[in-house]
Image 1: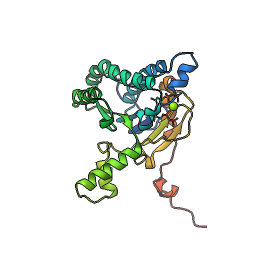
Image 2: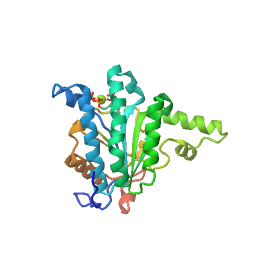
Image 3: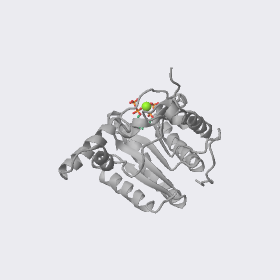
Image 4: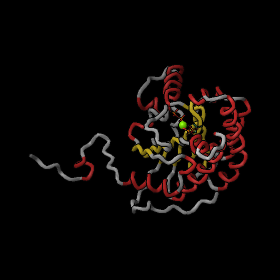
Length: 250
Ligand code: IPE
Ligand code: IPE
Ligand code: MG
């Protein structure tokens, strides 16, 4: 992957979302439509992620967070689960040198304890290898669930005898190193969150597309960013406050 210089969004907005989070859904259906095994869809999904990361870097996005394997995905057939684990290991071996070259810092977000010792080592090595990356952050949510994250953060605070507040919880969660996502994209047509970023998505703009993840290309990303740029983020305020116009009295 070679990264290009940041540019503004296609519709001219000067501020692309700083943090984009994606539920990369639809790999299985992409494969089924081609009469291929589901794992072929997951392999193509890795290619789509490489393309998306490059496109995000080119558009000045600082943080990309992707949902790669959920706490609930263990419920899939054993051969699909082991295939996904193997795919992750191989993808790391292949991609990490390029991530280092491109200044991408990798974080794995999720419950490490549920993974094999070999996988835990591979994740830790990839994080260490990319630790100097200063251009962009890639968070890969792997064996991740939003409920797990909230519970583990509360448990960590309780064990340290610290008060549980919004700020302390935020800091103790697995994504405490980045600001909350501005734009949350889900591919694959489902209109649900599936236990992704339950806390951090509080004020994310949501964008759902029928595109299957392997088909989510640069044009699809640009469409999502353009949609985001047209939203008015009010954070509880009125529209008049946001645009700096006095509300009319009636
Ligand atoms: C998302 O694609 C990838 C993972 C959950 C690992 P799916 O495998 O859920 O694809 P569909 O939803 O069956 O098409
Ligand atoms: C969400 O997709 C998890 C990932 C993309 C890793 P799923 O395909 O597992 O979600 P559900 O089961 O349709 O809600
Ligand atoms: Mg799915």
